[in-house]
Image (cartoon, rainbow, N blue to C red):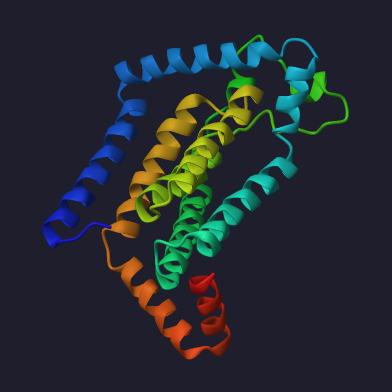
Length: 250
């Protein structure tokens, strides 16, 4: 958490400046040219590895189905629940506050991603570059996401970047932090392999939205307010109080 008015203001400035720089990297022609080169190189390297219908391409096909997204979401929730139930360094109210804040701001980031760029058309690399190896063609019977007319920003990048950064900043558990960071890295690869997103969709889009919402999570009193609410509920509710006593005494 950021303490002190000056530090909070500086953190807002830092985050919003980062958003501006990330956006400028796609809008300023010299930087955009570099991004196009990087995007193309990453696409050809990753998607090009799927040329043959082998175990490698089957793996990335399954990583791009809808069920994989559901499993990823379950993993994010279970990891936080494990922290709430098993961590012994923080009070239960603080752990529940961290769980709540992370959930709220991940959902906020998704909302910004889904509603803020509806008019922005950006074709995915699968619709622009060639050769393109279509997982839906290589893996018969497996429906995967391989293209988009609105690829920016990368939804996986938005979700996992916000999630992982807040876990790092709000949770002092090395195991949870390590798993969240590894998850963020791995969860963005499937769409890059399938050709549904450019690398810049993930880095610029996901990074910009993350830095846009991050200061509201850790440089405002939101966490403190939510922790106070949980403290009140745990004190007033017999059921929650019993759960708290069991977790604290376990």
